[in-house]
Image (cartoon, rainbow, N blue to C red; front, side, top):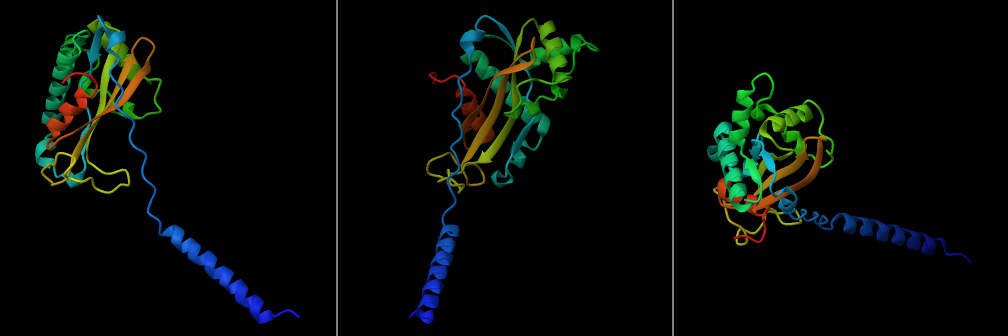
Length: 233
């Protein structure tokens, strides 16, 4: 004879077990975020002996939690200082390339008003998106025209500089004992998106995100740029 009460009890027990398992799964810690891709070294071997344009940076930003408004709040000053750090380090650390600095790119554009676009007004910041391979017009035309005047084929574009509070892979704030601490009391990391463009065909041939840590924006940026040329102090 079937025991209905016993069967109902077993069914309820099974339902409770399923419910408890679901609750336990939902209470699990979030999965760890994938580690960022390592910085790819600048392909200087393929650029040796060539004139390579270095466009001005047009985007710099920082997370609010870093409280760096006083340090990078003046956008023009922050962009100029960033350009100076990037160009100075690349010229010193990759002398096999003949670099046309942002200052030189501006001078060339000013001498060809009506022909060449102002490098500071080019829409280069959107190139930081990973999916972009073909450079669209008008940027493609602008870069090709400017490099035709400079006398080279390739352009290295710092597409964006972002300062973030460092985090562990699980998304939690990083331990301040492992990274330099900024004014906010939290570790800070500079992320510099860089792309290399063949202006004759209008394609992105190489890209990476250079990362560096520091207690202030300029130390972090310096370390980020140095990561593009590993093997040097």
